Length: 114
Image 1: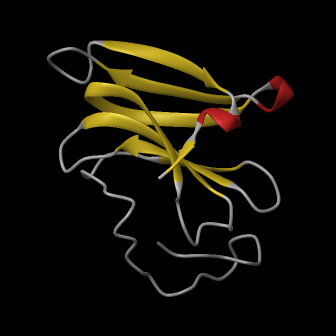
Image 2: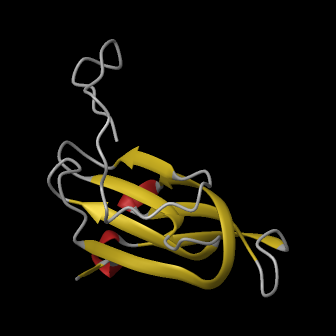
Image 3: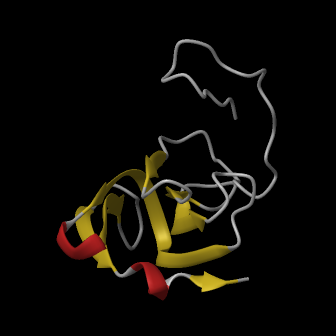
């Protein structure tokens, strides 16, 4: 991870976050509000288990999460919809991660602590 506090003009040195497991697949990161960040990706060493995570301390910790799809999954893209609902568009399938594209609408309080 690298952080910027000036709109991307400069960046901190790279660091590793063991909580955000990444199988070399496009993840999505989105600011929800002033302190909260959303992160989605296949939460596994393989392209499987699409998960949505919420940080309530500007990305220092990721204590709330929700698995959207247990099976094969790949790229994802996040948005904040009307009323504060979290939207996640992602690839998934039963055998391969590229069989279909799903859109999940998730209320922020659906992400559980853990």
